Image (cartoon, rainbow, N blue to C red; front, side, top):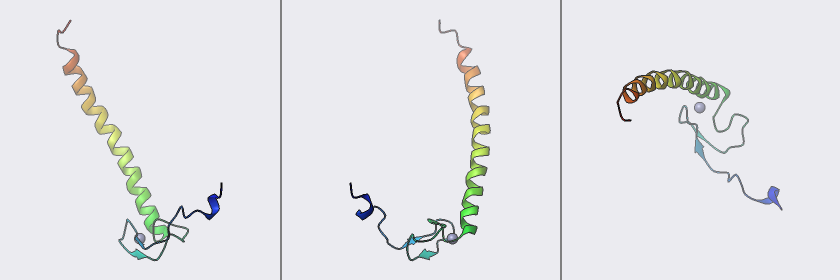
Length: 74
Ligand SMILES: [Zn+2]
């Protein structure tokens, strides 16, 4: 197995997903972001999403379940 010699990560230009800045390659400590600031912005957004989604889901599911299980199907 010659993993080190395989071009697993092809070096090519890419954009920072946060600020759309064009970056020369993935050879930076904050990849795939251009800087630590963008990395934190993404992390913050991700955390917020995680906090919001479970609450909304639980609310809707609870209503749904109540309506569904009230039927006299048996
Ligand atoms: Zn950026």
